[in-house]
Amino acid sequence: MPGIIKLIFKDNYVQLELDNSEKLKISFDAYSMYKLSSGTTLTTECYMEIYEESQKFQCMEKAFNQLAVRGRSVDELRQYLKKKNFSEKHIEETLDYLKQKGYLNDFDFSMSFVKSKMKSGKSGKDIIVRDLYRKGIGRKIIDKVIRESGANIPDEDALFDLAMKKYKSVKDKENSFMKVSNFLRGRGFDFESINRILRRIKTDHEE
Image (cartoon, rainbow, N blue to C red; front, side):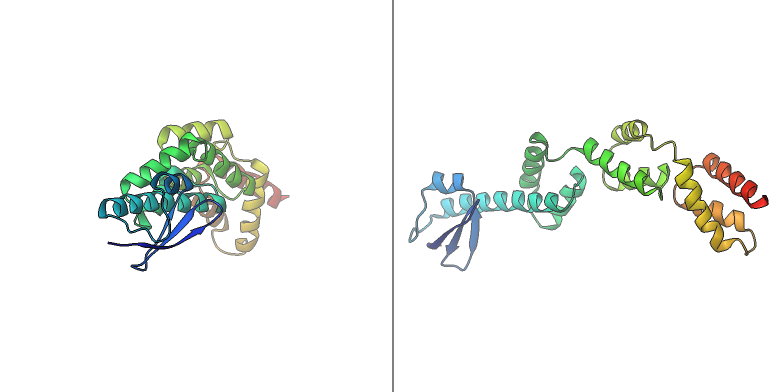
């Protein structure tokens, strides 16, 4: 049975170094509960419980590290933790805790994501909706975010600038306006907005 050969106290956890070369991270609460000390030989039952505590702690630690880099949807974080081979139980417990504490919120995440896309002016509603789906956001949240953010109504000036930039690169080629239309459609803008912008470009071009 493994024994503890060293305890290392960090800012927010205790690391146990075992004589089988394992290193386990546990919370201070778990450390206090098990009354661990250097030189202790762990029973099989105690070892398994501490191992579970270590897995739970590391799952939460990985989640917080990811959120520190940037916001994530619930499903994005779930898929990331799965790739790190944490159990479904620990993953769902971690996600529930983070949602309860307000660290994970799909509506807030989606609204921030959409506003960022709108600010750049390079993505239309269809692309934004597609990207949110890919991040695991549900239909109801997507519909609400699109409606409340105004993403269903593109910024005409930003769209015009984007279209003009493309037009200048293809104006001397055959079917230049069709190329601009296809470009904007590929960026997720709707046909009505595209046609309105193309009419504006044609009018300016004719002048």
